[in-house]
Image (tube, rainbow, N blue to C red; front, top):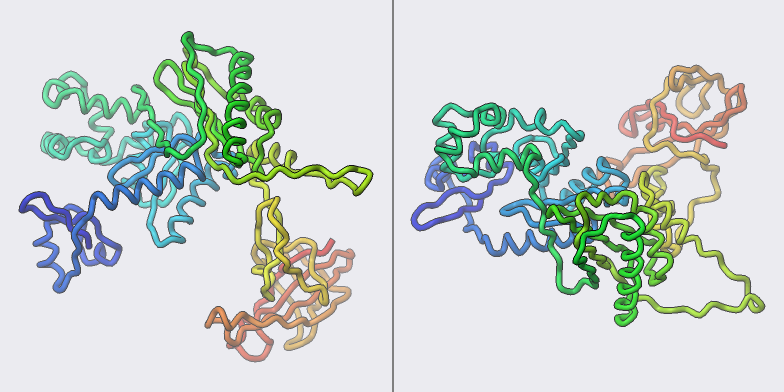
Length: 474
């Protein structure tokens, strides 16, 4: 448990799940926590170290998720993901992937996507769900029942509002503004307006010093698409010249649009390998210029190489000497920046368990050297998860006679097997004696399937003896 102090006052600043089960909570006086739990282990908070760690996480999020990322102290990160979430496969995949990456490092995280910074801040800290996405235009409905503490108001103001009978954001939002302003000042109204989107709250993005970045400011705001495209082309040329001086190529570039109303819009483009091709980078951004909303005008454009890697120029061989290899990375870049799904290659993994024998790698990654086993037939389509089927078969080694999959019964005309696959006992103790018996079966319509029985058909310790369908042959 982490203890913070201010003078002689000490209170709980952070607590893990085990502490929560014991009745301890953040904000509780340290003396009370010690009285509740004998032998409680406590360490002093280090706000400076926490802030430094949060800054490192923010810089990591900048390179991975969005061009507009800032610290939301004391424990958060705020991002404007519009224009960049397509590189992660959409909002759902981006948010779940973000939380999973934190969990993989032993860190608990909750994330929210909403129309405004204030509402996303409140939802991420006031709900028990790890991820939450609020559809556009539904912010008011989502935040009405949140507690007053989610408004980012000083603790003394929150306490006074509760004394007056206010319990939720909705209660406060339905109250006339003038009496609240007269008693508490403009802060209550400002936070409400920011949460509901009536007052802009621009994000001041973090920018490390080592980034290669070029800018263009305008004495008169611009807004026409052709004008924006012209200056984007010039910025790309300047960026490539700077990268050439350092021997680098860009892998991920951000175009930041600063509008005269003090709001920011961003576009992110990624490439499959380091490039410094002016024409190609210009095309990647110009194809998406229609997504820029200039509003009352654009006063500044910034182009940043958020991820840059060493680039070695290779001389092309003459076609008279050897056949030129077709480079498919431009196609990968177009598909990847278009949005929807992420682009990847499927590669083998050294595992006998079929669902563990496949991994996703970058589309331009080098060959990993592993191959799939070829001595037994494998289906052209492997299901993500084996699906339970109803089966008629003699145990232990006879092939099935018929089976029912997805509500349709199929009579087996031919069968080959069993192929026994053992569990990976050296990695998972639960698979010390686990086995699967796989069969290739063909029904009376000529369709071929890959099915297996969990267990050896005799010993219950080897598996449940239930049947599953795991793949379909072409």
